[in-house]
Length: 244
Length: 290
Image (cartoon, rainbow over all chains, first blue to last red; front, top):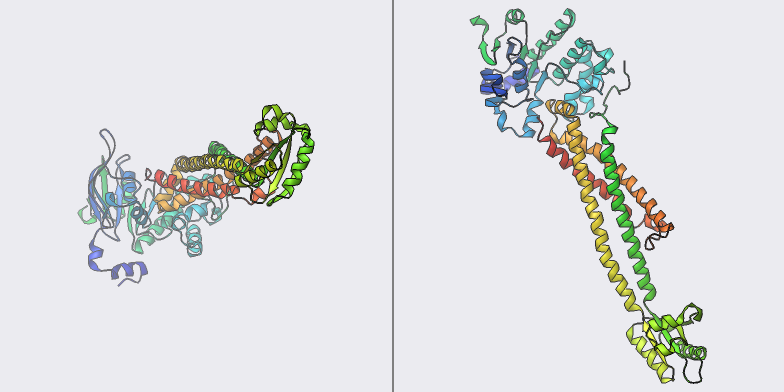
């Protein structure tokens, strides 16, 4: 039994529930125009608590795949299941509930430019009507961990590219999502910040979250030892570490 | 570094006052028309009700000369007879210089005698046609040529006309109310359209449609309340100016008592209509987002 409370709670929910993938794509395509496939017949499944690296050349559909999992887009074809439910059949209310269980660092990161760094980081718990006292401490802690505490009152437009990226990571991890989607976690960050960002992602994973992390650096992705989802011209293939 | 934003719990939707100028003007105009229609209606109805109240129990007697008795003498004698009649409270002779002959003709005095006619205004308890006929018979029995006209009928006729005007006067504010709600619905949709990026970010962060709709409704509601107050203020000023300029006799200008009468309720009613319109407008527009 795990000593981590989140993981322990999930373990108690039963073996059958654990075995069910949290994300299952079956022949999912995302078509943006005539003969323009952002994703082509992608099929894979992600077990709960797994950690996958998503790789592929630029324009292969990595960001589109993350946006589909984050319910920021709808599949054009195929069946996409998140937490065991077909996203095509989710009501708008259910979609909102599902999105609350997913944290995403999409690229390029979008912020509410009129709000402070602190408010942008606290967006997810705030829009779910949680009592501010319940999450203020967590927001402060995550901002501090990512080196953004001194910039809490700044506007996103005043941040450097690296700081904006760190803010996007902070926003995604606050609230401890069950699925964490990270697009280019090391993008634009100096080595020390990159290490901190990766460590935070790994901590969230250690707490039981399923992580999908995009990396344009194939060597880094392979060296990580995590299973790979490779995208090539919109087609996905899953590679386990043992098979490499 | 820009330090204008509050560090914590700032408004989730960015404010863009210029983008809201046109809907604000449209809402203000609709509110002004609605409020003015209600003010006119309230004033017209109040006038008609007052008139009916004044005319109830009011009789006018036309007396004219005959034989050797002058018109003035006939009027004086008629006054004494009528003052003693049961139900009569007061008898007031009217000034002959104000064109009694024309009035007398209008009230049915024979043309040849109208020039020598005198008028008496009677205030009676109850009044009505029966009293008018009874007074006419009394004067006739005393040898006085006279006609007695009861005015209660005129008052109820005016009230009926005011009733018809009231129906029209209620329809106009109702139309204004619907228009106000529709403009608010459109503005709520516009608010979501203008802030589409922010709204999609809220939705992907886990916000339910109801949460976003509440934010939009709050913002449009503030606009609706402001516009309703401006519209009401404009309508009061317009009514006062029209009344002062003699352009609208029925208006009489907003009186102090009008502040307590129902028509200022148009502000909260418009506000609620705006909130409802904004809610449905926002919910409807959100369906076309993520």
